[in-house]
Every structure is written in structure tokens, then in C-alpha cells.
Amino acid sequence: MTTDLVQFLSGIDIFKKLDRSELSTVADSLRRISADPNEILFRQGDEGDELFIIAEGQVAVTVELPSGDSFEVAQFGAGTFLGEMAIFDRSPRSASCITKEASTLYSMSSRDFYSLVHDHPRAAIKIMYRMLEATTGRLTNSSKFLSDMVVWGEGARKRAITDDFTGLYNRRFLDDAIEDQTAQALAEGRPMSVLMFDLDHFHAINEAYGMELGDHVIRSLVPVIRQTLRETDLPARYGGDEFTVILPDTGPSEALEIAWKLVHGVSELTVLQEVDGPIDTVSTSVGVASLPVHGKTARELKDRADEALYAAKSAGRNRAEVWKRADVGA
Image (cartoon, rainbow, N blue to C red; front, top):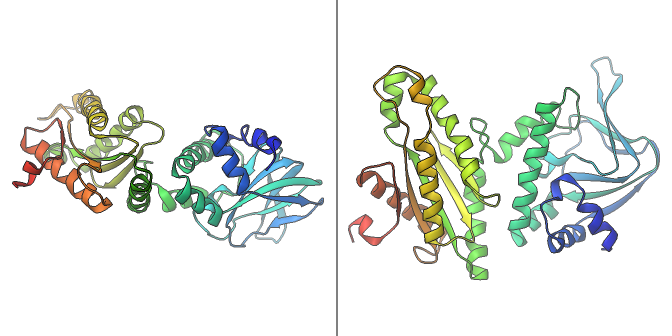
């Protein structure tokens, strides 16, 4: 691929965090499309499996009305992208896409994207991070229909890789990612750590204040998690008040530092101080396990992070612990 294409991609929102080498890798996975005016890129109802990036020209997005007429809901110009959620969820397209003029586009198939995830996970994580920000921003900051996420996109995003309650990654994504990250780290001789944590005395909080406030407490953790973690870290809600985080390129000492930052950040939450009741503090306990010192498979890392979490509970809660064999009485 040419230097010009790499330079062009560096200005596309979802690729802005990539370095030049990563941009070159992405460029190699793209297919160039030259389209005439009024050429249909995809129709409403088609199965979606491609992300499109517009290099030149103008593209319109239309939806079919119950009357059978078409209604134009958005236009995209050079330097923008659309169809992004087809990468994750091959649901039928909720709109049609047609060129308004002669246009040049690049496309990436879902197959090529998942090859990127497998071969270059750090680059893929950066793209997904920016993609989620960009697509969420389109939904929350605009009153227009700006992409084919109009009808199904937000639901598709959540079904594919995020937990709709917190906006963090979901268990489905994390279970796949931890296997891939573990294999990649072992193959490249890099460290990797896993954090597991939950809220201390969460049952008592629910009993004292009710599940609605308990849900509010769980949501209040999200800003702390996002502020504490790095862009390449992968936080997921496993269910209830339970969370897991993958920390790429991170050994046990650095992982423990991050875990303690989480502990301190959660302890500063004032959500329970704003209501009358017997509990006025929020705290968390965190377990840490690292590859390769504590295990060499994804299952071992998860089990040992969980054991370290319970060791933190036994040591008094509101703390972080790294796994050690004594945690299981051996």
C-alpha cells in the first residue's frame, strides 16, 4: 500500500491512535472500491459484513418508508466511515447506501478485522476503543441519523461486545479476548495480568437500600474504572457487581499498582453518603494474577485471580492481593 494511503488513514477517527506500522498493517487489509454515481454499496436488508471508509466523493444513506418511498437520512463525505458495526454483528442492514457522485472508498471485511485482532491485538484494541467512542458519540451528540446504526446499531454494539448496563465490555467478549491475549503473550514472551474484583458487602448494600440504589452504585464504578485503566486495558463486567480486567504487557508489580488505584478510587465514591442508611462507604477487593509467573493458560489466570480476590476478602477487604500458593492452602 502507498504512503499516501497510510497518511490518509491517520486522519480517520477510528485509526488516529495507531502508529505508522499499525496503519500500514491496516492499509494492507483494505480493498479499494471505485464507484460510479448512484451506485448502490448495499441495500436495506442485506447482511452486513463490511466497514466503509470514504476517500473521495459523497455517499447517501437512505431508509425505506412503509409507503415504499425512500428517505435520505444522512450524507457522508471524504474522511468519514460508515457501516462500522457490521464488523461485529452481521445483522441485516437497516438502511441502504448509495453514492451521490463518483466516489473512491476502502472497505474492510469482518473476516479481515478478526484476522487483525488475532495477529495484531493491540492495534485492534485501539481501533475498537475509538470505534466505540465514535459510534456512541454519534448517537448521543447528534439529532441526525448519521450512520446505519440508526435503528439497530446501539443494540448491535451492546450485543456484540459491550455490557448494556455499564457500557464496559461484556463477558462474551472478555472470554474470547482473554484466550487470544494469553496465546499472543505466550507466543511473544510478553507478560499479561488479570484483575478480578467486586464490591465489598454488596449484598448488605442491596438489603439496606434496595436494588435500585445497588444498581446506581455499580454504575458509579464505571468512571473510576475508565479513569484508572489505560487505553489498551480491557475491562469487562462479568455479572452483578463482578468485574474482570485484562492488562496486556503488564507484570504482577505494575498490575498490583493498578489494582490499588482501583481500590483507592472506589473508596472515594460518595454515592452512599448522599442517602440515609447504615452503610456510607463503598469499597472493593481486587485479586491479581499474572502470566507467566502465576499460570500459563487463560483458565489458570482467571482461577488464580479469583483466588487472590478471596484472599483480599479474607484479609479484611478494601484491598488488593496478588495470587500466591498460600491463597489456596498449598
